[in-house]
Image (tube, rainbow, N blue to C red; front, side, top):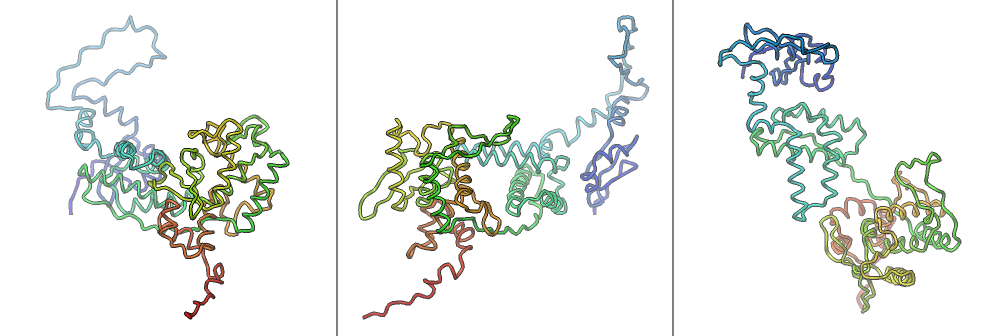
Length: 448
C-alpha cells in the first residue's frame, strides 16, 4: 500500500468532481481541493481567486504584485515607477514556476491528456485514409464522437488514471443520451484506441476493463412483394400524370435540413428506374449516387446481366453483377440520357443533370417517401423500423434469400459487397419457417 500526504485541507471524490466541477471549485474558498480516486489524491483543484493569491507570492519579503484595472486608472504618466524587486535566492521558486516545471506539463507526461491523444488518433486515422485503408467519412464520424461525448467526459481525467468505474459512468452517460447498444459499443472502440495510445506512451500497462455491451441485432426493414409492386406502379403513374409533390420549405424561408428545387416537384421516370434497379442489383444508395456509365457493362450470353465495377465502398471493390431486370432499366435510362444530351462514360446514370450528387441522392430519398405515401405503403414496418431508400437494398438481399433457388450466402454476400456474418446478423435473422414453408415441405424426387 502506497501512502501519500494530503496537501489540502479539503477533498472530494473524482466522481463528485466530474459530476459537479464548478460547485466544488466555488465551494473551495481560499484553499486547494484534493481530488481523490480510490482514497488516493490524483490532482488538486484551486479557484481562480486562490490561484491569483499564490501566484503573487513569489518569495518571502517581496511585496505583492500590483494589479491595475485599465478601466479605472486616471493617468499612469504621473505614477511613480514601481521599485525593482529585491533579488531572490535561486533556491526559492514561486508556485507558478513549480507548476510550470511539474511532471504533468513537461516531457512525455504532457501527452497524458485525452485531447492530446485524440489529436494523435485523428492523425493516425488520416494516414490510414491516405493508404486507402479507411474512408474519409470514417474519420469524420470519429471526430463527431470525440466532440460529442468522449472529450467532454474525459476532459479532466488523465488517461493514466482511468478505472473500470469511470468507464461504467461513461457508459451510463451514453445510455442516458438514448444511444443504441451498437452506438455505445462503437464509442467504446474509440476510447479503447485512445487508451492503447496511452499504453504506447507508457502511461498504462494495459487497457482497463471495459463494460460489456450486448449489441442487439435488428433486422433491416424491407418491402414485401406486394409493396414493391405497389411503389413501382405508383412511381410510373406519378411520372405519367405529372402530379406535384408538396414543397419542403418553411413559410419563413428557413430550411432546416433539405429543400427540393421546384423543378424536382414533378416525378421523372428516374424514380421508378431507381427502385427497380436497386432491388435487382444489391447496390447501396451511396453507390447509386456515384454510378456512372463507365462503371456499367451489359453482358449477354447464357445469362443476361450488368457487370458493375463501382468505386470501393466499405473496403469492398469486387465487381458486382445484377439480375436481368436491371439490364432493362439501365438501357431505358441510357436511351433517355442520350436524348437529353447525356449518356457519355463520365455521365451519371440517375439524375445525370445534377452535379451536386449529395443533393441528387436526397432528391431520390424525398421522391421515395412521396411514392410510398401515394402507394399506401407505411413509412415504417410492423416493428417500427423506418423505410428509407436503403430498405431497397435490404429488399434485394431478402428477395434472393426468400425466392432464389439454391443460392449460397457466400456468393450473395460477395456480390452484395458485404460479409456472410452481416447477412446472417441483419438479413437471415429475419427469416422464419413460414416464409419458406414450401421449401420446408418439399421432398426429394426419387431416383428412377
